Length: 404
Image (cartoon, rainbow, N blue to C red):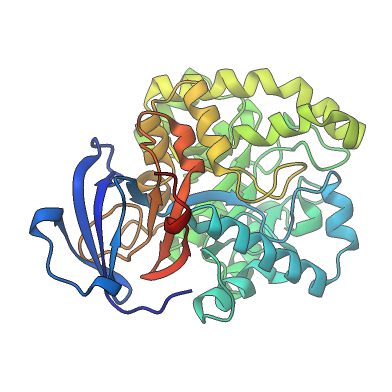
C-alpha cells in the first residue's frame, strides 16, 4: 500500500462517470487525498519517474459504489443461520475480509443495508480511522421492521408511527448514516412472503420524516406492489429490489427522483444454487425471478434513476461481484455506459456522497479504478482491474503483470 504522496497517472482514457464517452490519452494528478489536475497527457505537469505511472492505454473510471451490501455476511447458503450463530468477533472478522475483497475489486464505497449489533457502523469508523483497509461504508445500522417482519434478526422491530419514529431516532443516535426500512416481506426470512405488505404508509412516513429531519436518506426494502406504493407515498429515497413496479409506481418514482437499487444478482444466485440453500428460500426466489427482470426493464424504460447494488452477503452472493450485477443490468436493458453510471455517479448521489465521489473531477476525492480495457464497449471489462486508488492511496497495482 502506497502513501498519499502526489503522483501522476498518464496514458489513460477517462470515463468520468457522467455518461460521456471516455476521453483518450489523458493524465491525472493525485495529490494527497484528491484529484488536483487532469487533462491531455501531452499537457501534464512534470513528475519524477518514480512518481509517474503509465496507464498503458487502459481506462480509468471512478471508484465503484455498491449501494446494497451486508458487510458482516459472506454469501453462505444459510444467511439466517450465519447471523444466528456468529459471535460479534466472528462477524467482525467476516466483515474485515469482505471489505478487503470489495476494495480489491474496485469498489471504494459501500452502503451497508443492515447488520446486527451496530457492526457496520463500527467497521465504518475503523475504515475511516485507517485501522483497516476497505471501501468507505455508509451504514444503516439495524433495519427497521414490523414485529416478526422481514429481517427482524438484524433489525429493530417497531409498530405504529410512534414506534417507527422512535426506532428511527434510536438508529440515528447510534450513528446510522441512513435508515433502512422494510415495506414488504422478503425471500430470506422464514414465515413471511415477498409480496406481503408490511409497514403501512403512516409508519413509513414517520421513518422518512425523522430521517429527513436529521439529514439522512431512507432506503426501503420493497418487493410487492402495494409495499412499493406505500414506500413511495411516504417519500422514501430508494426502493431496494422492486420486483413489482407498475406504471403508477414508476410515474411516482420518476416524478420524485426516487432511486431503484435492483440487486438482480441476488435472486439469480439463489435459483442457480437451489440444491445448497434451504428449500423455503429457493421456492420464494424461483417464484419471483421473472417478475424481477420484467420490473427492472420497465424501470429502465420509464427513466427511473437506477443505482447499482448486489445485496452482497446473501446466499452464494459474495462481496466483489459488482461486475456480475452490471453485466445483468446490460443484459436486461441498460447500455454499458448507463450501467457504469449506475455504479458511479448515480450510486454516489444515492448514498449522498456525490459532492466527494462518483465522478472524476478536479477537487474530488481520488477514488479511481484503472481497467485494462474499455468498459463502455464491453461491461465485463470491469473485471479487468489493474489499479485501485481510494482517497489518493493506491490499494492495488497490477501494472507489472498487465498483458501487453
